[in-house]
Amino acid sequence: MENITALWKQIQAPDFNPVTGKNLVDLVIQAARESQEPAQVSFGTSGWRAEIGSEFTLRNLQVVGKAMVRLYREGDAKLFEALGIKTFADLQKRGLVIGHDNRLLGKEFCAVVADQFLKAGVKVLYGGEASTPEYSAAVEMLGAACAVNMTPSHNPSHYNGIKFNPADGGPAGPEITDVITRLSNEMMASHVWEPVDMETMGWESFDILKVYRDFLIKQGTIKFPRIQSLVKSGRLTLVVDYVHGSTRGRPALLLDNPSCLVNLRTEDDPLFGGVAPEPSSKNMEGVRRILDASKSWYRLGVIFDPDGDRVRFYDGTREIDMNAFGAVAFHYMATWRKHKGVVAKSVATSNFVNIIAEGLGRKVAETPVGFKNFRKYLKRGANPKALVAFEESDGISGLNNTLEKDAQFGLLLALEIIAVSGKNLGEYLDALYRQYGRLYPQRMAFEVEKSLVGAPLEAKVKAIAAKTQPGMSVQVGAVHKIVKQLLTLDGTKVIFEDDSWMLVRPSGTEPKVRIYTETRTPEEKDPMFEAAKALFFA
Image (cartoon, rainbow, N blue to C red; front, side):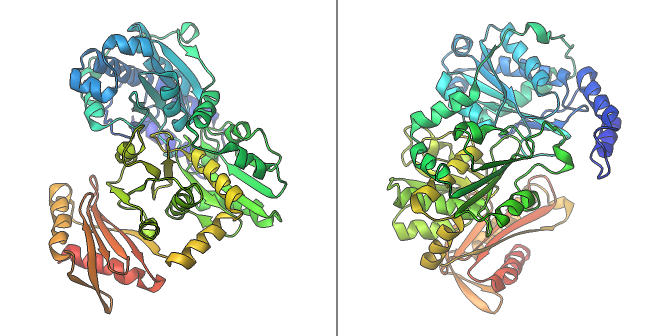
């Protein structure tokens, strides 16, 4: 295991050459195929993520596949309700949808899991390389019982991961993932590898992108005719950076290959050119360079993560993160589209949309961090229903769309907003700032004693609530702020009468406290952070 980690360090070194260093990658692949070393599985709502070749191996994925089949064989009525099926026979009939992103050995990892379902008489539909929201949509459109997606999302190239979605297509909750974790670890040490013949796999391949587009059209989520008028107008430059991920080629097919589209980093590269494959400011350099030089009336750039569930925007004048875009999207859905419903956001996400919602007389559904918490606002027949649901870590979905984060939904909705409003995203955002004022976000952390990790740290964070009840005064720099609202659903969030706020959250695994703040002026950022820190230590 240590040898594989050392190999990955060489592969990820700044001076690594993928041509001359191919033998190092081959050694990792060999280890992933041949290693019989067990691993400790920890299957959260974002799946199990581990290092390829040391923990994430064919043998260990076979164990996880067995655990998933046992989940269904041994489930009781309560578990079946969470899974969205009636019986094991229901699973066999409806089947499993499975696929992967662009990481090393994606298809082989899928095969060892699919093989376990096939041996149990379960129909398996293989979608190949595709994005996370496409699998979520496919479960619903094809009436499948569940989906398995091989991806660690935006993690670096030495990781792979496996996600599980039940019959509603959304992220699995702990009532499901805890069982998969327990069963996997029960079998891990004693498991004997069962060879899998890739040539005789009994799965059925299908066109997952066609299914996804049919889903969007059926749901009426996106108004394609409005978008087509924009992309064919000759007034738009659209730049999409895939960072070599599974969304490669998707926008071209969804938009009928428009001439305004510029595609970046579409090559097959499971090492991502040596960069961290995430929607970051650093990774936006290529998008910025092209749009800054563009003379088009409308300009839109986006960057996706490898499995297509995170997206960030650039409009030729500024970078627009999800804190800002989520607010724009909600305002558009509530005003231009005139839909009834709420906005769902995580507690660590900007409160700018709260101010907009209050001005429009709409409600905000604020949830703990984690996209799974939006399920009840996004599922079919939800009441209230979310017009958009988003979190500050670049994830978004919306009205009648998938229960998973969906970067392509974000791109298509951005294009529709531009087409209908006649404004670039930055212009739309500036209009909202003029109407509602603006907030300045900041996210920081500080370390604490290791002995505090876990319950003691949570207790100290919860204790802040007693000092910040509504109506109380908190000193922020030279100013006394009055508390308007207190939220304790994930950490302690204190909202003041001027709509500035602070959130203090404990890390569950590290000796760290994370502090999120938003202020009405840039100058107040540091005093707000210091005030939050002082409340923790008081």
